Length: 107
Image (cartoon, rainbow, N blue to C red; front, top):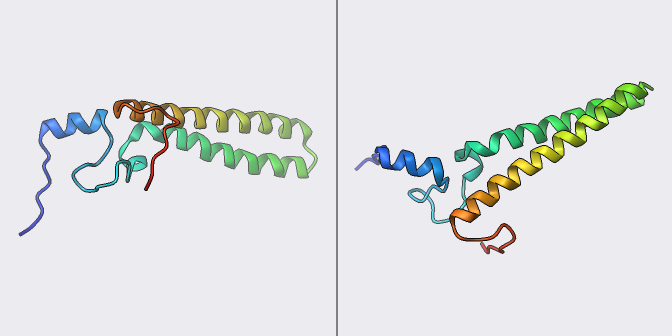
């Protein structure tokens, strides 16, 4: 017997607004980072912030104060905006469950 996934229209609409994969796991948020594409811009900004941090440190090490200042500002903005986007999406998902962002969850 082979597994046949249900690709019906109701499942597509449900997964767009409710990112949990209830059909394949018993854990509430397993794989959410991959299935919920609304998190991706935040993750990209966080990765860009880390890359800019490296570039900023190199610029500061070579004595380019102007580029180091610009890079530092860009790094802080990327990290702050990326973190805010991820937390806002996480709050939206928790609100769908009727929970607050700070509610504790056990494993």
